[in-house]
Length: 606
Image (cartoon, rainbow, N blue to C red; front, side, top):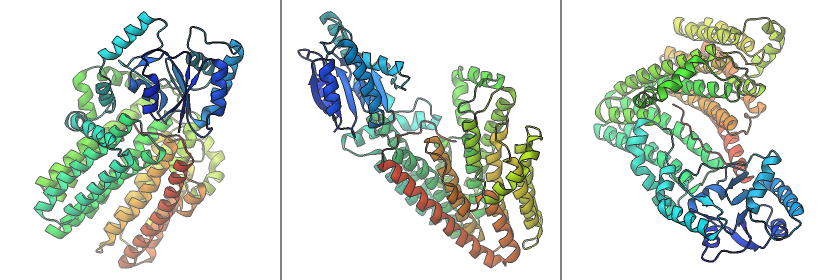
């Protein structure tokens, strides 16, 4: 149980002790700095500890925000400071210094908790201070100030603020106006019944899988039920994040489940639509389903790569960014621009409505056109920003892009030999050769007969161009395009060769293989964003890297018959899925158990 140490003389009529207990703290009273330091030393080292001024007046949710958020090792609000086990030593040092400076005597007029916070700041510690908005958190110095603070507390509806803060500050039109107005109340209902965000996330996944099953029936009733259930799944998807914000139940495992399940739900639904089309209308739309997954995944990689490349870039300004900021100051343009990028709310609403009213083929056509338009819009804007800004990218950004590139042993070995030559080439070389090599292997696979040797030749060229692209640190203005080009090349090669095989079951097998590989690429992103580092090198080498897998697929297409190729794709899909899933689950469960910093994704990839 976390420990809260109340410092100073208790104030008659104060509810601070009961409020701390309601937040789960074991409360101890301390009369001065020396007593506080003693109690701090006795507090369990594996639990959170907080120092709170007994004179504190404020909203319970202000205390909750300041003292219970698991994402931050150190946090403070006026009159209170807290530390998780990882930051316990920093708090102890600051407390010892304050005790020594004060001589262990009674507290001065100012707050000991605030002095400790100032000492932490002086030590360079990263102390989180939550945005309280209209919530009150104060340490009144006299009865009059205390009465004024209590009146301010009474004037603000704590629960209304808490409900409002449960919703993302920035979200899509559908989510903001059609889902969040009532899903926040579902989140509160869940919180009051002890449900966790992970349970709601799991319920959302199950609902989406049932929706995919309904779509797979191929009947109009099944399609209508699938559309309704997909919307219900999205409502639950919004609810889990709102529940996490409402009750501050953030966790490493929860962030991973939320992000991973979103992708699993959408791509399982694509498969359900493809099965339903084949079952109900004898229409083969597996190529469209796989194309939608490829396009959507590449869009996300563009988002991830651009953000990582500019995560800590200096001089991060450009005329394009200034124009974007100006447009964001005009109300209607904000919503138009958010809808254009087709975020998950708009996308799922479109898929649900079209599923219920039309056919899977029309649904996929609309999805591909919408995603292609939004991808063109966002990528063009980011290219313009990159070309017009004078940013110096860091080693951290270059490392993140190299991890996102997912280069295997073949590209690594060739890159070592090309390193000297790469340094002499222009700055645009990396994305240019990545694009040309990828386009060459995809075009060759598409324009030659299945079983011919030319895709293999193109794949060998692709290995060499991939090596040249990563032979030097990815710090160029457009080097963030390298990972998306690699993703598109690998996924489209699989799609084209499976389509050229022209045998029943090849495209579903290709869908499974791309889904398994895409999971690995998403998992890499989530680890980097959670500051957990990229997946281990042995994993990347075991599954070949993007260039190794592309080469293997082309070799199999040359050596095997169409039917054998289908079987090989299925075996590869199962093998890759088993390896990456087992390692990923092991990693995230272990990170959760050892108390890795809790995270929560406030941004939603398109």
